Amino acid sequence: MKLNTFLKSQLEDFVNVYSKYFFRTMGITLILTLICFVVIALLEKFSDFDPSIKLKQISLLSYFFSRYSKGDTYSLIDLSKTVFIFFVSIFSLSLCRLSQDKKDNSELKILAFLKRIHYKDYFILIGILLISSLFDFLMFRIERISHLNVSNNELYYYIHGIIFLLRIYLPLILFGITIYRLIKGKAFKLTFRKLLFIFISLWLFNEFAFEFSLVIRNYVFGLILLPFKIENYFLFESILGIGLVAFYFLGYYSALTTSIELLDDKK
Image (cartoon, rainbow, N blue to C red; front, side, top):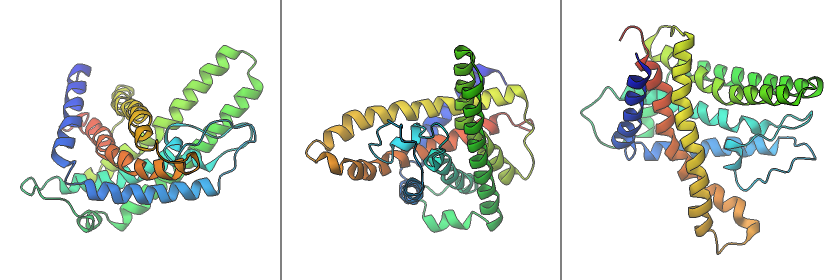
């Protein structure tokens, strides 16, 4: 498949999944986001932060697109995005199995979703979550070692950039390939070209999610929260953020599943 054909199909799918499933899955995505936020709040509670950390933690949304590990201190809160993708993967796996029923346009219920996920699926996805978490810690340690041993600043910042990309996108790719394996019952034959195409698809929606979050938080949430005191801002924006994060489920579902489906050699 050529890149232009791939991009056209992927972009069309982003639009189609929101058109077809947004209202039908709204209840499910809100529930999964709420559970995800509880897990992230626990990660925050047990996280260590370097004394020099200066990044402002406005709400739980702050942890989705920023990294808080610094110096010799690894912060568990850096796993927030990976935990979110874990829940997206559960959602994606179930929706892939339910999407074959093209006649039913009613709202999808949480029990129907749960019935589509087998015990084996949970164990495998939890295993990928643990592998991704370990990888994130190892990447942090490698970045720290390079900071201490690489004297060339340009080389260090290049290494830092590569590691930053890997920490974001490798878990996404791992979960995407795992979803494919669980649905199709076979391994996905990955090549460098396919890897590049999958990365482009994930990058497109990830960057959209980042920029969209900035706009919504600054201009929508900021307006809504004007009457509230600054000490309550963290709580209130976190509550508002549940709807924003729930909105992202379908986009990541499309990027994780459609990108790989389009590259399936058997299609």
